[in-house]
Length: 297
Image 1 (cartoon, rainbow, N blue to C red):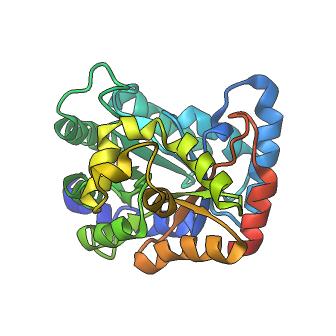
Image 2 (image 1 turned 45 degrees about the vertical axis):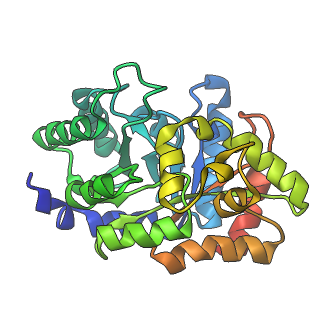
C-alpha cells in the first residue's frame, strides 16, 4: 500500500465514525472477568449518551476493544495507544483482522512508540515506527484504519502520509493548530484532553499535578511542552499554574465547555476526553461522563 493510500482508504470513514467527541479511559480496558459486565454496561451508556468513540488508554490491544464492541452497535473503539515495542506488527495485524471480521469498520488501531523509560528495546523510534507501518501494509491493515500518537512535526507528517491521522496526547489547542497545518485538512486530528470536574482552583490544580507527575519524567512530553513555549520553570515543582491550566480543563461548566471547544476551533475533528478526579483507577467516572455529554453533546 502506497503512502498516498491513506487519503483514499478509509480516512474520511474513520473521521465520520469517531465523530466529534469521545472518551479516553484506562479503566475501560480492564481484563478482569468480574468487571466485564460493568464495562459493557458503561460502553452501552456512552453510546446512548452520544459519544462516538472510546479510546482505550495504556498499552492496549485489539482484544481490549472486544467487550465494548460487543456491548454496542455503533461505537468506534480505538487503542490509545498500542505500543509498537509490546506488540509486533504480525500480532497487531492478526488482532486487527480478527476484530474487523467480527465488527467491521468500528475498530481503530492507534499506534505509538511509547517512551524510552517504559520500553527496554526502545531504539530509533521513528525508524522503528516506519518499519512497523511497512509491515502492517504488507499484512493488509488499511492505512485509513490506523492512527498515530504523534507529537512532533516529523511524526505528525508521518501520521498524515501513512495513517488516517493523529491522536496526540497531553497537548494544547496551540499544538492542535500546528498539527493541523502539518497534517493538512484531510487527515483526522483527534487530541486527548483532560477534564478535572472541580471548581475550586487549589483542589483542581492539586488533582492535575498529581496526575501530571509521571508525565513530567518523560522527555517525549517535556520536549513537546517546550516546543509549545513552556519553560523549565513551568515544568518544575509539579508544573506551573500556566502549564496546568493549559493541559487540564477545570472550573464551572462554561469554562470547561470553552476549554474543550478551543480544540475544535484550533482544527481538531474530534476530542477524546479523559476525566481526572483522583479516584481509584478502577472507578468509572460515569456521572461525570453524563454531565459532560449534557454539556457538550
